[in-house]
Amino acid sequence: MKVLAESMTLPFISDGILVEIMKVLAEAEVSYLSPFFRAGKRTWNIAGTAEVLLKCNFTHLIYENHEDIMPGGRARRLFQRCCEVGNLEAVYFEGLRLAIHSVDINLGIEMLVRNDKGHGKSTLAAAFFAICSGDREQASVLFKSFSANHGGLVSEKARFLGNEIKWDIVMLNPPGLDTYMETFSYPDDDVVYLPECADDHVFPHECHLCYMYSCALEVCGML
Ligand SMILES: [Zn+2]
Image: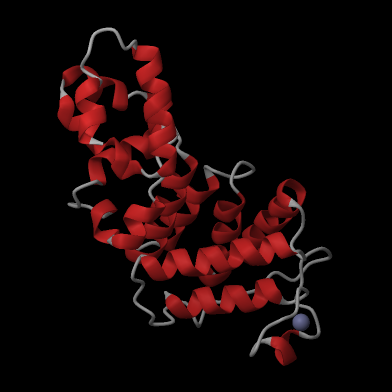
């Protein structure tokens, strides 16, 4: 990587090619951009363009040490710039962080809703947090939005994304105090409601029908 970054200073490599190289590397893992930020002003400027920032993948970084993207963390400034340009994954993790670690879970929901329609995990996570906060009407709206844009709540994909959300929350070191136990409120309308099997299927859980309820309960327990 060091050799590659040094070669980037050569004048015969155009900005356009550098952007394409950086987009591929950033999408694989944001830390691959580090040599470009260090190599000089030209590559630093290119690495900081919206085109590249939109591609930055923070998952590996956060899984290794979530403190890096927290306030005061070594990648916080870059992470915030990615949020500002609308990087879906950065906005998603910032939404989780706010819901878990700020004093107001609604700040997290507001951040996650920015990704609505374009990022299924954000929509589902926002629904779980709305359930925790006691706003089951908003949770229902979010669940319906997920259904319309990401293939339905009763599906393998929904379960896969739900499991990813739980794991992502674990990686952000939640307090695990069941803070919202008293306000937990699952939607109950004509479209989204608690299936009859929910009480029987919580532990262990293999049922598509009541998976979202089980997942929301687990998320609530982690906060
Ligand atoms: Zn069930």
